[in-house]
Image (cartoon, rainbow over all chains, first blue to last red; front, top):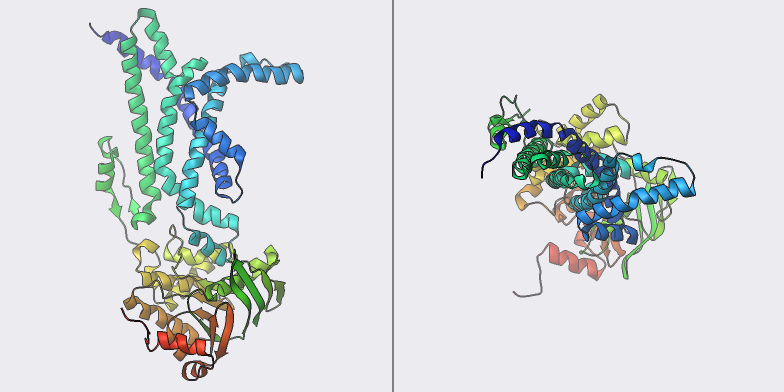
Length: 260
Length: 251
C-alpha cells in the first residue's frame, strides 16, 4: 500500500478553500449560543423552575447529535414548507435555502444547551456577596450583573467555552450529512474520484488539528489576559514574534509583571 | 435622622426579629451587641434592603416608607445614603482597590470619572491605603481588604455607615488596624451603626450600646450603663461570657 502524496497535496489546498464554511458555522453557532445560553442560564438560576427549559436540555443531552441532525434535516424543511407555503401561502422556495442554515439551527440548539449549563455553573461560582456589595453601593441589579458578575463568571467559564468551541468545530464535520460543503464534505468528494479515502481523511485530520490548536491558543491568550485579577498580577503579553512563542510557555516567559 | 419602627423578619418558621425599634441621630456611634442569632445582622441588613423585612417602617431624612413595600426609587435613595461594610469584605474581585470605590461613585452617584477617582483616592488615604490603589483584592491582606471595604463605604459621604461584624473574619493580629480606622472615622463625626463583638471598641467609642437577644432589644444605654450596671440578667450573662471569659463549662 502506498500513499498518493500528490493527491494529498492537491487535496490539502482544495480542502483549505472549505475552511471558511467550517469556521462560519462554528463562529456563528458560538455567538448565537452564547447569547441564548446565557439568557437560559439566568432563567435556570432563578427561583422558578422552568420545566420547558429542563425538557429542552434533557432532550439535547439525551440524544446523539447525528440523530438530531438527521431528524431535523428531514423534519425542518418539510415542516417549514407546510407552515409557510401551505398554511400561510407565502410561496417561499424552502428547498432552495442553503443547508448551512439548517446546520446552524441544529448546532445552535445543541450548543445553547451545553453553554447554558456552563454559564449556570460559572454564575453560581460567584458568591452572593458580590451581588450584595454591588447593590449596597447603589448599583441596580442589571448594572451589578453587567459590571461585576458577568465579567467574573465569563472569566471562570472561559476554559469551558473553549472546550465547547472545539467540540462545535469538530461536530461541524457532521454537517456533510446536510449537504453542507465543509472541509469534511469536500474531502470526501475528492476521495470519491479515485477511492483515495485514507489520504483524504489524513488531510482532513491534519486540518482539524490545526484549526483546533489555533482556537485553543486564542483562548489561552484571552484567558491570561482577562484573568489577571485572579493571579493578582498585571500581565502584559509582549510582542509575539514567531509561532513558537505563541505557545503557553512562550507567553509565560515573555509575560512581564508590571506593578504600576 | 434615621428611625426604624417595629421591624419583624422571619426566615421560614424562624422568627429573627420580633418588633425592633432603632433611632439614630446625626453623629451617633451606635454599637449593637448580642449573641449570635439574635438578629443584629438582619436588622442592619434590613436598613438598606439587603433583606426585606416582613413588617416595619423606616424614616430616613425625608424618606418615609414601609420596609416591606418600599419602591425601587426609595430603595436606591436609601442605599445611596448608606454605606455598608461586610463581614467578609465582599470587594469586587475583578476590580482594583481604586475601582472598587469608583464603581459606586460613577455608576450610582453619577460622579465624573475624574471626580470619582479623586474622591476614591481621598477615601483610600483616610484608611491608609493610597499606595495600594492599583492592587486587586487577591493581592491584599484581610485587614487591607476590609480597610478598602470601609473606604468604599465612606467615599460617597453617606449619612450613615453600617458595619456588619467588620472584624470577625480577620486574623487576630489584623483586627487592630481595622478598629483603628473605625475609631478615626468615629472621631471625624460620621454616623455609624456597628454590629460587633469587640467590647473594647464599644466601650471606648460608642455613645449608645444596644443589646439584642432573641429578636428584641433587651437593653440600651451608654456604654457605662450597659457595661458596669446591666439591668437585664441576659445582658449580664452575655457580658460575663464575653468580657470576663467566665464560662460555666469545663473542657
